[in-house]
Image (tube, rainbow, N blue to C red; front, side):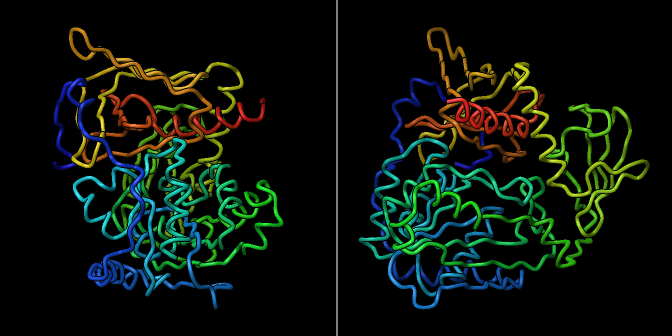
Length: 424
């Protein structure tokens, strides 16, 4: 089934569909698929002039845990180049398996539903490292970075590393967001690079606490593509470089309106107060008149986060919208169940729908159950949306009227979780 195709199915029928087997132990890549993987990876890394710098990697053999940052699909291709000629068991989100589960299983991929506890994944990664003697490649941010900066990392990462006591390596790509930002998938001409660093030896892990391990990983995961662009004087001259940036910069810093930002070409403006900004070739924002509140795009983005946090602390944050509900039970594709109401408030997500005369869907996800949320922009023509998972299903939710900012929901999920954990 094409991902863009809308196929309506009743909930009771979808409930009976087979599910992804999330406990299959990872295979080593079939030998005859290795050349295919390399042929798919290398042309794009050559086109990007990707340079991989390796730090402390000399002499590291056997299985290890590879933690990679995530900005675009080309990240996987850079990883293939970085570990060449070795193979890896990659953790891949379930939507990546649509229409190609057999192929991905044969190249060694591990299927994962995002942002839910998964004891099976720990077993699979351990099997990859200690049985396959492979590289277990994980993208712990679990989604593309929205601004080319570090996304939230799960605290459970340190616990897993402590359990394994296996070597830990990071692969941090620079420039992949600039080349193809998630809010505008048109490719730009950008040279990219990556740093591959051996950050934790088994002896280090033995002598460190889980908290110290998490701090070490978080420190190694610092990156900022717009800072990288400025420092390396990378000019992006494409005339569409600011198109759709209102997907992430949705709130006007001049008047505070959240529903009037628009973008086209190199410009971003507010239809409410009419203030206009232009993105220069070095990725900086400049007001065409008056002061520039935020030159650095991640600063604008983080200001929006702080504004959402204020709403949460004031007890006023709440979003409600009618949504199309798509279910993703397995790799055959999405099945549209119908329409329902999605509420996100101080207690978490609440999805309710009447799907026929006698069938209802009620899903509650508490704040403590989601440290992050997956969002999409104009997903295969279905509009902006978000998704969350249960143990045996993933719901993709697309606002019928496209009347909410999914980026704001992204902030709210993370800030609600932080506040709750802090108050425990």
